[in-house]
Image 1 (spheres, rainbow, N blue to C red):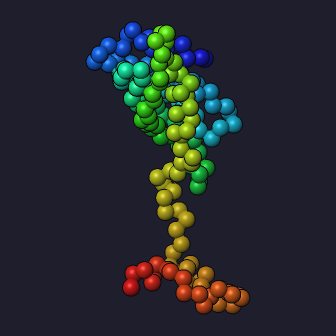
Image 2: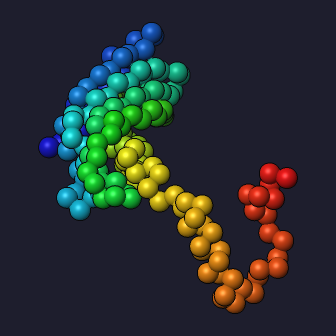
Length: 160
């Protein structure tokens, strides 16, 4: 579904006090394919405060929705709220009648997507216990360690 025509702002509609523009876009607006790691599961709400300053139009935009992905640690499905703020500016000429926000908003959303998501339940999942750390160090005593004598900063040295 292409909602780009709904993101066209006529310059004559931007008054001195600015223009508040709100739209709810289809969750497939960004056109993420089935192979993508994240998907929108709710409509994408766009709220823009649009101002005109001489030969420039400035759009202060807030975007919100809900996304579904898989935890990068446990591979369990999870959902998260998606919020993004961005500011776009458009240089206008005397013959310009409108600005198109669609492609720029789509690009901002794609760039603003999280690289990976981790569920709250998996936060301490891969921490090493003190016993495991001790066993690891004991096992390392029997292996060749060419850099063992280097005085590298460690957490223990930082505390002193």
